[in-house]
Image 1 (cartoon, rainbow, N blue to C red):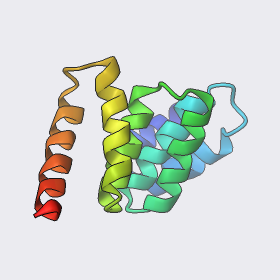
Image 2 (image 1 turned 120 degrees about the horizontal axis):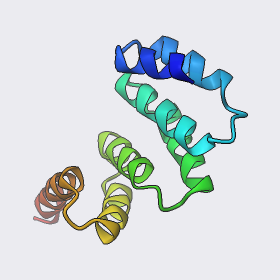
Image 3 (image 1 turned 45 degrees about the vertical axis):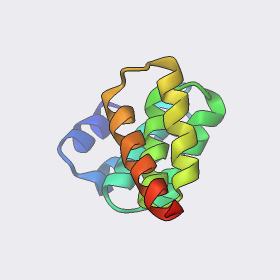
Length: 116
């Protein structure tokens, strides 16, 4: 696991993805799937990122980091309604989560432009 974290922190996402994939049977599946989602997202692989975040949330639907990661992927995929649902779940648990507040502001601005 540590090797994968080191590669992720060094922004060597392709290597980190391979290391995390090897750990999929690990009991810390939420942590691994969230980390995989992060690596996929940072390397521009949004569909696999979404799959990894979904798997993490299947094990722990309240994991704020996975919800936030998935919201960011939805935002990049222009699935704004889905992103807003996840951001609101994060804010329900932690109302001053800075990244969630900023993403929600972006989402609401986009929605208001689309409503005009």
